[in-house]
Length: 133
Image 1 (cartoon, rainbow, N blue to C red):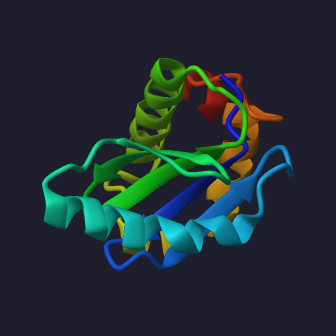
Image 2: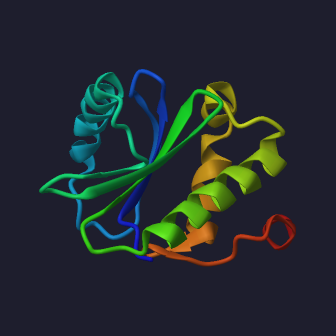
């Protein structure tokens, strides 16, 4: 799968939390994400995968949050989406609601969970019961 980084953004595109797994993508590339989303929404051509010369953005939207994965390599996008949905599911089980406030209130636990869920861009343990142990 190989995701380089994962970001949690609010609806305006402000980064609430990010985790760099591989170090091969500039973390400031996320600043290009929201203008691309807005441009494609206006055109009626918004897809959950946006490719640029610098990287590929794969994203899901959940409770007014964008959960975005970036990759420089040719990643298996289906696996990226399964991983993003599993991240949302695990975090929802931990915090009851995954929203801006729960991210701000629990960022230390979030970083620990993101480290357990993914190692060097590859999914690891994504079962919440195992993670809770």
